Image (cartoon, rainbow, N blue to C red):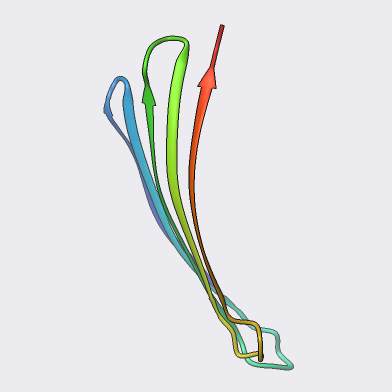
Length: 84
């Protein structure tokens, strides 16, 4: 089973934000199922016609029925796009 919801919105001509949340149930038949949760939020700003700056936060969490299968992960990222 997969369920997700997300949006992307252009706040003004130079700035946009986006977000997404998803839940995934993974059934392995022979052992307990995993519940995988992922969420993200990001923004993008066009400084001018040559430079765009992006930032994002991503979170992942796996609740596993298997020993040692649980994990969580948080990642922040910044990037720039130069055009000439």
